[in-house]
Image (cartoon, rainbow, N blue to C red; front, top):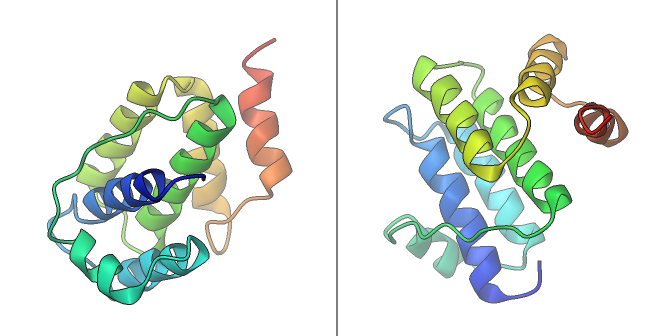
Length: 133
């Protein structure tokens, strides 16, 4: 992630997705703050993002799109409650990103079965790469 604009866009998209079910769970907020810290976003800017309008920035590489999809999926599972609105939204977002629907379904199924919803990054990439063959 190179620019401040890209970092903000990433977080804005994650914030919008985390509230798609109508509420922001404490675990979702904690996860978002950890991502913000990794991106070197200061606390005041992070808090300000909750009051900004989302402007989606198209990620150029497939790897970047897969990363963002996985981050959103982690948010979806981090509160321990899977809402129907979240499920519909994540599939729609993945389609808009140009990700393979079959791979998306497989990744979400793997995450659902994992004890903490996390899957090995190599497996994540392998699932998407298999769709290219």
